Image (cartoon, rainbow, N blue to C red; front, side):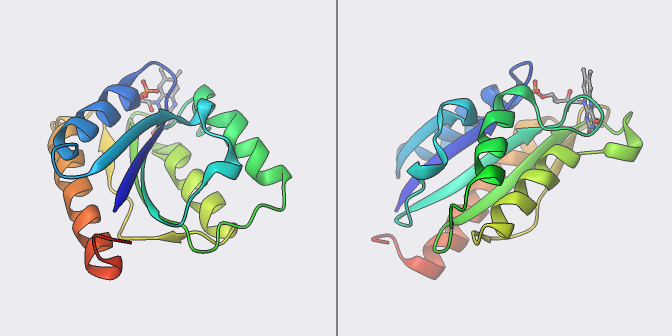
Length: 155
Ligand SMILES: Cc1cc2nc3c(=O)[nH]c(=O)nc-3n(C[C@H](O)[C@H](O)[C@H](O)COP(=O)(O)O)c2cc1C
């Protein structure tokens, strides 16, 4: 099973986290790690499992690096049927009304285009006690195990 980690970031936290996840998985899988700003919506591949890490900026908005991707997806008729993904959000509960809305928006956009989400959408709170990697690494491993149990390693 190929794994593509895609990240949406404004100031680099999601990128660092995506790289840590890639390092944790690349001994066992073929893994790529790509900024959503460099990922054309036409590049989705059903044989790849997508792990998405995305922050929130502004007033509950997508971070800058995810915006062109989201606009391209929203504008086009692209169908993501057959695409499977799991998503992890980075946010800050200081923004209580819009906590982690970026990853929520992105998950909705993907599922509205026919992609299937595996698992819940865990979130990191920059004002909380946990380190993002302490939440995201177990999440990534569980999500990959779930994908493998559904599709098998050769999918
Ligand atoms: C100007 C600004 C606006 C933010 N807006 C939100 C928000 O609306 N909701 C939220 O949950 N987090 C918000 N955050 C917190 C970021 O999502 C959090 O710091 C995250 O770790 C940043 O990750 P990044 O460096 O990958 O963009 C905001 C942070 C800043 C500096």
